[in-house]
Image 1 (cartoon, rainbow, N blue to C red):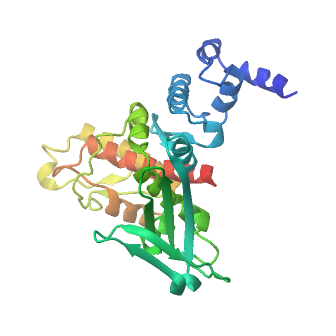
Image 2: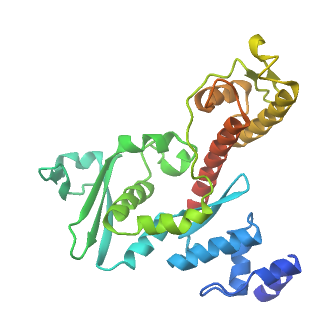
Image 3: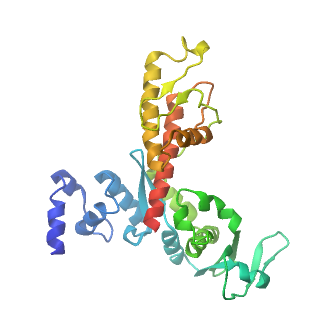
Length: 320
């Protein structure tokens, strides 16, 4: 039955698309088609093939959530998860394990981190007690034959941004403390990158997928006096300074900007900023321009930033 359903689903794609999906590494056409319609459902066939080629090149299996594709405004980026990074570490010479643990408030008296003369953590003393209480820290130890263990210790304050971000529901327990599994993965990610020579390999292999490189954050500029964002996505009013109306803001440019603000309004709705005040606050805090006047490049960078937040939220959904 499953094969019949897959065959029926395959026929929904154009014949040219079917011809474009072929054997990639250990994955045959049927497996690839299944992943195309699930993991890569929003990708074009060339984008999906490129993503799979890169994963195969590094020995990552998207079906095991080692990596996942993200679209930023139609452009493809790829992320390697903690599971993917750990799988690469296990294939590295001298792998002896990665050990992640959280420290809870009832264990503070029995916890001690020993450092060397340079302040590098070289030893952890930790006694687990029950009830453990709220999570207050986490640490990871990455061991490798012929190398000193890499120990990474993080206080809960270091992940406050994640606890307040768009994916906070994946990070928080009912008492508001970090989810132990998420915190351990976060600190483990750092120890793996520090111990094993795989971070640069991942970056180099995924570079062709990341088309957001070169994005530089310009200086902040207050712009709420220039635009009134309408929560109902109606064309906002552009209030152009009088001394610029004749030269720097011709009518065509103003019309173009109106379309861009509508696009921004749609994206902010997707982020959950649905009211006029919420949109205005977000724009005040995040919209930046490189010069004295707003340009289309400024809008491009701003829209990319919003799309990145949406993509991170989608990644959090996938992780959950």
